[in-house]
Length: 272
Length: 309
Image (cartoon, rainbow over the protein chains, first blue to last red):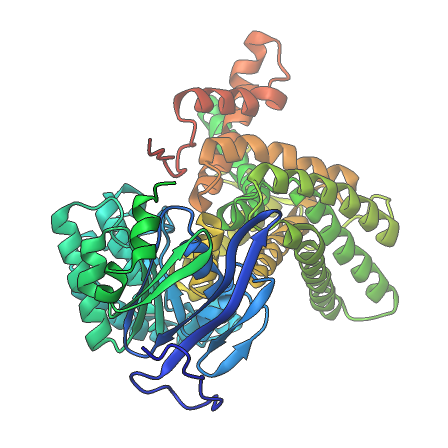
């Protein structure tokens, strides 16, 4: 384990596989008296699947929210692609290549599957307001080009049959898949998945696991994932960080984490 | 035959004046669709746009600028005023309220209404200013078929034409462009929209700008009809039944709602009025809206509200 690898200060070079893509150092976050995160440090390396686990209320989602700019930590720094960053807004995180899904599916319910995934292309589309208002010409051609990309994602996720349906009417498992599609449409370098398999049955979980592994291998995407299903975590992830009451209690390979006494205590409780 | 001619005349007149209601209702629908906010200030925005336009026109014409140039400059000036208003509202009213409840946002637009009404009249004056952008005389059609022909107001026809173009343009913009999609996305879920890289403050600015420009268009037509004056803000009240009937989230709904209200109230006044004492034009639309609320609360074209339990 070499968790304390310093991020390269070169900003423009894309990190190679195995290099640190994102590192969090001494991140602390509190809401009033509630300390959601205390001095948490860990890193995510290019090309890996990094799981963040922990009992309920351990601060996992808070950590994701810090990474993609919804929350601003009171202390500590986030370094992404070698650049230390200050308070930032979520859309800036998005423009730097961080995509995410949400614990309680956050889709645009009134819109079709296709339109939902098309919103993921927002940052890739360059035509200005005026050109869009005129629509015909550049703007229309751009739409068609991005539509092709989106259709590829739809085929990959096997949701072609629901592409025109309003997502509010879809079953939960499919909504989760559409949400993954929307994140993939951003062609992210780092994909944050907040409980991608919550509430799914076995078959849906298997499908989702397959998608996640394919995304890692063929989309060249690094993945950070929060998940409660330990079987899934152990199978999918390369490294695991464990949080409990906002603190990091373990960090390592799935096997190391599984045999860590602190982790076992956190999950099962300790006798006093 | 006389009766049929009369019926036709009232129907056409009603439908066309209904389109004018739709113009105002459109502004509401745009903002509601895109930000989930019921914009109480839409009527005030029509007043502001109208005042800015008419005062700029008067000023330029007074200075001897050619009429067509004055109209172009006046529209540009009023458009700029609406852009500044949109920016101010986003920056100081809605910006600090991201992720807040819809009702909170609604209350803030009530506040904005009073400020806009006051500021507009303070800056541009509070008289009745006549506006002459469109012809206000009338055509008489089918004089050979019906005695006296059918009277059609030219202004209403212009209004209908403009509303049609506006709706077609907005429909394409909303359905097929990046910004249109982003607008709908922001309306559905702030957090998710931010996560895919949509800057909410920019989108809200665009929404209010578009609503401001629609208000300007409504002001050109209504200003010609009534003169630009404070009572133009009460148009907002007339737009309410249109919205309820058509559905708050539907652009075509605003048009159809307007047609139903316009034709309905005129026909009811003429054919139903004498039997129940007359003067029903003023409340007929609200009763119609009430009936729609009972049967189809989301309106004729509104999105069905699905509640997962």
